[in-house]
Length: 101
Image 1: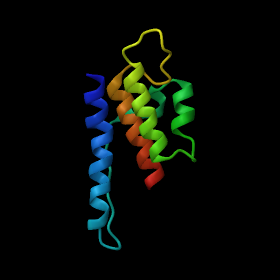
Image 2 (image 1 turned 180 degrees about the vertical axis):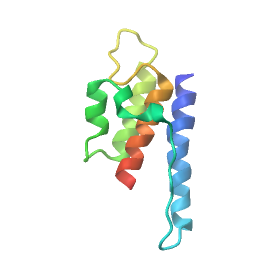
Image 3 (image 1 turned 90 degrees about the horizontal axis):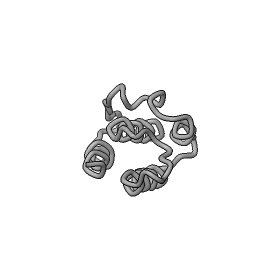
Image 4 (image 1 turned 30 degrees about the vertical axis):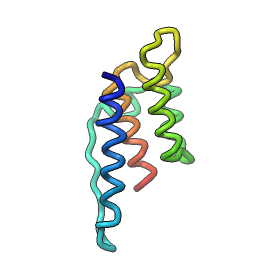
């Protein structure tokens, strides 16, 4: 379930958005709408710090998503992000939008 939510709500949205860039006119824009549940306030403090870092890259975001997926089924691992998968997928998307704006 975790992998599906992260792939659909984060990775596929990023991929689709990037497919649209070549189709934009010079003054064209992409408006990304997400959920209020993607607000950083719904994430633990360490996740907020990571996602609000102005040097964060797309590659780093995808690594974070990958690590979240891989660690989510192991209760012994300390998740940096919220255990609520939808919240985390939307927080990742919000971070992506922030640095592409």
